[in-house]
Length: 101
Image (cartoon, rainbow, N blue to C red):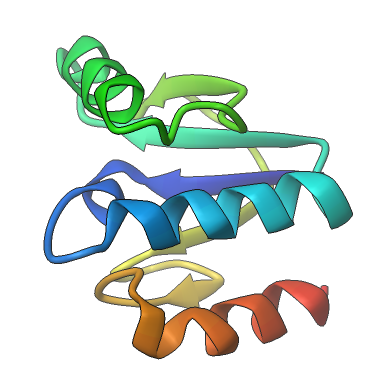
């Protein structure tokens, strides 16, 4: 199964270290692949951002919004897990939601 994370959840107000924690947990215990869904023309920017901040280790691919992929989606709306940001305050909630899959 794939975890698909909206690219805006990688940037502030999300905490990049907590984003990395979520992807580490997800890759180690639940998901085969972790994808970051980006707007067309922004994949390089997001890859550079993730790499610069050491949060790219568990990301399998960056995909465009118009690419069809099935999986568990984390985003701010129209997702399996609707969240506004990834931060230490909601880390336990996110992990518990992922564990229940």
